[in-house]
Length: 282
Image 1 (cartoon, rainbow, N blue to C red):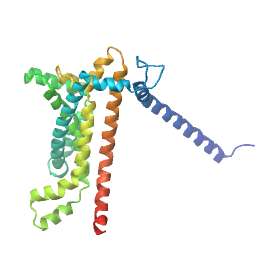
Image 2: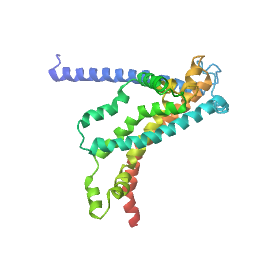
Image 3: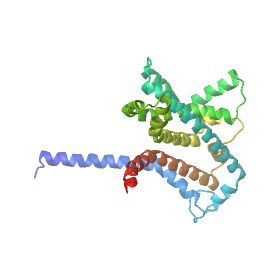
Image 4: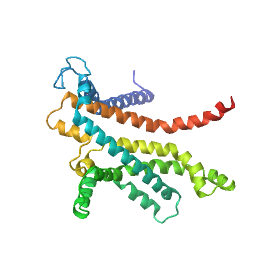
């Protein structure tokens, strides 16, 4: 019995759907299988940190926490990340206002120019800043030059987050505050910034996460200093050890946790504000 046109189309759709699902599954497996293996190897009792898995242990995490080099690298990483986050939050929020509200010529071109550090490879940013610091300014490389380099890279992400919130901002709230006698500073402090706070915090958390994981730019600019990604890189050159797997797993966990907080925080704050009046009436 011959198949009619509808049966042929339905079968074709099923084949296409199955092919796309299979392809997507292979892509996700290729992306996430190494991360899953890394986490598994960090708990592997095998002292070489590879297959076969001979047992399960947290011994390598204990060794990592006792390692003085790792402690110094973590401290330096957090110090740089906090400084970069503060700079990116202030500069990014300040830059978002003229991009959205100011009537400046070539505003679209300026927005593209501010986004260039996202588009330019980190290798080029690192090399150009290295040349600028050493050949032009004659500044000795240190953690502070790494802070500058990372700030150049992560600030546009804060600009994007805050600018997107500003574009959807209800300007009538500011006009209402002005009608009640609030000056420009009071409107900014009591109306605008509190409503922008979720976006600012989310952008700051993204900046912190990006700084925490940043390797290429930091490698060029930190000089004799050491951060956690650079420590992992130097250890991998001599062979992957279980300690490296444990440290890398902790870095992945920290990045995922901060990223999840950054994504979910605006929604949580918005829900809390919506529930506050109902709770107050009880």
